[in-house]
Amino acid sequence: MSNTPAFETSTQSSAVQMRSFSLISRGIVQIARWFKQEQSQFAFKVFARASAALLAGYIAAATLACLLTVVLPMPRFESTITANMLAFLFYAVAIIYAFCVRKTWHAWRDLGLVSLLCFGLLQVCGQ
Picture (cartoon, rainbow, N blue to C red):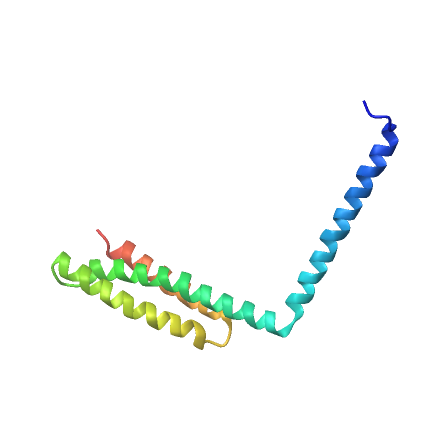
């Protein structure tokens, strides 16, 4: 048993909690200041566009490849190869498109709509 009374340990633990809260709040303030800087806003916008290009572009290209595999009037093997080659081309165009639009959410919206359109047509035209 320790020789310190119970009320002293509770005040010590609350002091530790207050100090940790103070450190956390200072960290949050520093992060908020960092986000307000022009460089960090630009970096966030580039990250958002790159993620739209990579994620939404990939999903749109994959659904387009699936749709073209079903729709192209060729034997299954040839239509699969052709669809995948066209999907690579579309993916490159989607990446370029994501950086050409004025607003980032337009890239997400448009690439998402292309993938939804391809998926809907795949459901209609599919087997």
